[in-house]
Amino acid sequence: MNAMNTYKIFVLTLLFFLPGRLYAGDNPSVLVQTAKVIEQTVSEQLRVYGTLLPDPDQSISLSFSHGGYITKVRSRLGQRVKKGDILLELDTSPTAHMQFIQARSNVDFARQELAHQLRLEQEQLATRSQVDAAKKALLDAKSSLTALRKQGFEQSHEKLISPMDGIITQLNVTQGQRVQAETTAMLIASEDKLIVRLGVEPEDLKFISPGLPIVLTSVFEPDYQAKTVVREVHAMINHDTHLVDVLTVIPDEQIDHLVLGSKMTARIQLDAHKAIVVPRSAVLQDETGDFIFLVSAGKAHKVKVVRGVNNRKWIEVKGEVEAGDVVVVVGNYELNDGMSVREAN
Image 1 (tube, rainbow, N blue to C red):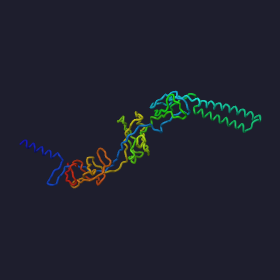
Image 2: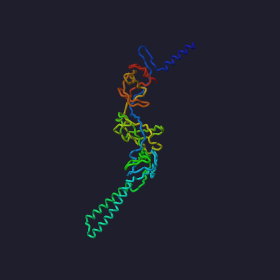
Image 3: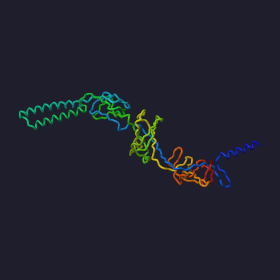
Image 4: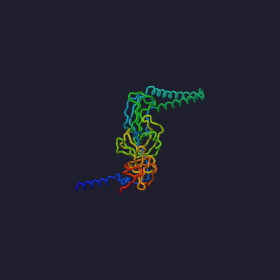
């Protein structure tokens, strides 16, 4: 008798806790849990990746104004430098220095020639036009000398000095190298202005515009986060990444401890909009697509939907569903269209 009672209690307990179907004749009934369909503002996040770079607007290109021979390289790629640091040393090429010496000699000769023409004019042996020509020759010689002096031709040995605090992001010369005039020796970038170049798939470009909020996370330091916005959206594919470049700026107060070249993850917050949403568990899928079950007058009705924005809790659905409808969230796997349901308390 005790065994029979135990069996009955087990069966009753099983029927009570399992929400499956109960049959009364030909009318199956399923115990379900439901929720209200609601309308709320949603926005989708686009996750992309990028690289931390110096701001090109805050970078300086350094070069020698004349050719020569690199005798000393005092800096390295990636090195931090201070304003006034000696970066490179250069011996001016003999040809360039000779040009300066010749220009200085031309000035001396033009000055002597002008003095000679002035004396001849006083003795009425030279005309005013000859004196004017001598003055012009002296002026031209002085102009040439000044130009060569500004280009550094006067010095046989020159030092390239850092004009700012920063990081050397490009170094194009080596010790012992002969360089031509105006050769770019290096680039120095400010540490105080950094950008992130993000790579976006071309088909996602239509969703992105300047000003959209971005949350940046460092791949190397997952605890680091920075909030910023889209600054620029480019209009061509980067040949190296095969993606479209989207630029954003690191806020000045969040630059500390970041290393140039670091990989960054970005979550771009796309434009928000009003949407009909249901709990994630309410949306099912079969060979025909996504669907939900709405409850009306004790019956479950299958409604086809199209998924939209989704997060950990809600999914946006588009179809014949409105805010205030009752949707099945538990027990929907056992339902067929038109089946009777009982709602759990």
